[in-house]
Length: 222
Image (cartoon, rainbow, N blue to C red; front, side, top):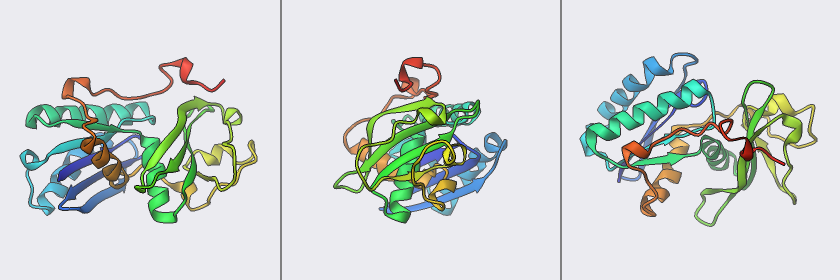
């Protein structure tokens, strides 16, 4: 399978490619420059892998939540590419990408992901790892003030994601210092997107939409 994934939902410009079970990626900090850097990064990665867009089987993207501008960039780029090459699109939560990366790199199997949402709020969601080594959402994803985070029941949870810088003095929860600097990575989107593709859980180009969470107040924790 040949699968291209991107994420620009935070300050990073992240692109990854799955080809013959091997993942290669470009991941750089590019605050305020994602729009200028994402297409050249895609071009460079495909060129390094000796692939053309038309050889891809599917496209995946971090659909948010995250920076409004960043999520829109990823959505519009992946939608445009999908129209050009007529390929299905797989939408993956940017919070899930953080959780998947933290599991792959640090081995955490119960993860409370918290990302900065600005305006004194955070995006957050609880994830567990299934038997296939893929993260699954427990409940819903939310956007709330940090003190409104609902701590998961049970032991063994690790806090990951950049939002913990906003939370550490307001909720009593252990978070990992290394994982607290983790941003969504396209390479972590790849395994989640591949499974969705196997399950035919993908979208036509015109169905591709970003997820902001703030657009729907009913998503907020009660």
